[in-house]
Amino acid sequence: MSILPKADVVLRGGRVFVGYGRPVVEAVALWSGKVLAVGPSADLEPLIGPSTKVVELRGRLATPGLFEAHAHLLPMGVAMAEVDARPKNAGTLDELLGLIKAAAATKKPGEWIMARGYDHFQLDVKRHPHRSELDAAAPNNPVYLVRTCGHLAVVNSLALKMAGITKSSPVPAGGAIEQVNGDLTGLLAENGRLPVKAVLSPVSDEDLVAGIERGAKYMNSFGITSTMDAAVGIHSKYREMVAYRTAVRTGRQPIRVTQCLLDIPEGILDQCYDEGLVTGSGDDMLRIGPVKIFTDGSAGGKTAAMTKVYAGEEETHGIYCLTDKEMEEATMAVHAKGYHLAVHAIGDGAIEQTLVAMEKALAKYPDADRRHRIEHCGFNTMDQMKRMRKAGIEPVPQPIFIYDFGDLYQSVMPDERPAQSYPMKTWIDMGFRPAASTDAPVCDANIYPNFYTMLTRKTSKGTVIGGNEAISIERALQAYTEFGAYVNKCEDHRGTLVPGMAADVAVFSRDLLTASPEDILHDTRCDLTILGGACVYDATGEWGR
Image: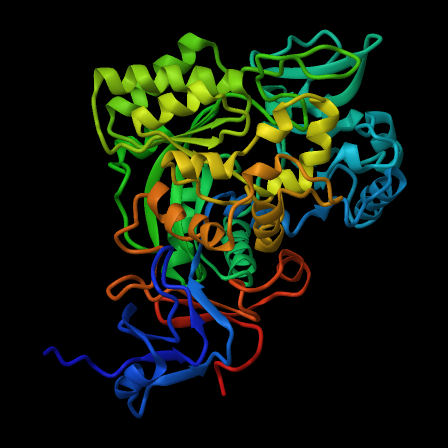
């Protein structure tokens, strides 16, 4: 009979969700950064020594640390220091313009105003702001206002001038520069934003590290202990790689990060590959994961590539960022180098393009456990799902899109597509491991709306969209833990609380397993977040008692 050491930490007297399909227990013991034992509180009593930290759960639920499988940690953290233009702060156009005007009052002439998060569908005017309106709010400052989806932006006249964009500028492939009656509106989509991005003021190295730290601490407040930064290089190119290393070295990254390297467009893959930074290299705090390729935009912005048209004044199928040939060549090159792939594809048209490219790459260079991913994978067909399953390709969805954007989906796609989107139950029933995530800062990293919509398929306005795709709380927890670890190829270390796994734990203020969806949404918080056996977030002050 083996004799276990005294635990560093014991959480007891509550409910411990060890993992899907496993018995819920009363207590968990942590030692040397790993799970030591789980079971009844009485059985773990002998593991408590003089220096053991004991946390009384008092009926609360402890789970494995959550895995935010697709977010943009660094851009989110940097954006937290910019103008917050989300609907909660700007529900009307006047309020939005007021935020821009207030920011301009703090800037010197010529300094950029960066803002993010507006949703034209939720503004009172039900349209995007016009450049002339931004001109009036900030006449002496260039403005870059990003829609919540991250695929559209509105800029003012000064920003257009600095970027060299005129009415006669050619529209780049895979992008859009909107004109109405021969006049630039300031609305830019996808690659149409590249000329403006090229002239934005660079942030400092310290700003990047501070963004990582700020974003990580915010995620910690929801019980998140692991994340994948879904496009490293998208904000500040290779400097982001350096910033992450600095953050780890200086103790300013209280979260485990998988880096998804941006390839197309404007990526950093070649430099990373030359340095030997391939999938799987690194350690448990910072490791190289998949490679990111963008193929389309967002459904809410009507830039996700669809085989059926969107509703509205102008018929559109969305935007393909790449031709089929370009996509196949890029996919083959990345796959041949041994990388895991994570391709952004939301519309069924983009998913088809992605799937064909991945199938060809896997046929030429077979790999039964490559686990390529389709990020979002919002509007896939049953045929596509069957082919994905056969090829071992996983969907990485954001159920919260139903909560935040479901009503908009029904507006721009008044047919069967919204109800069939992000089909969590169907995917799970078919054997997929759809890892729940938020795509923050596209949506808030707040986990509770994500749980709520997985359980109910309700939007923020209470509309039920595809109710047959609702799943149980146990499955929802699995999607936020085990599935996140699996699609990031670290399920041997994270995702459950069985002995030997990482001592990453989230403690919630209530038992999620018995709570109503409404209570989870409106009246639940994370009390403690433990990373490798150390507390990185304490809402109650109990850790230091």
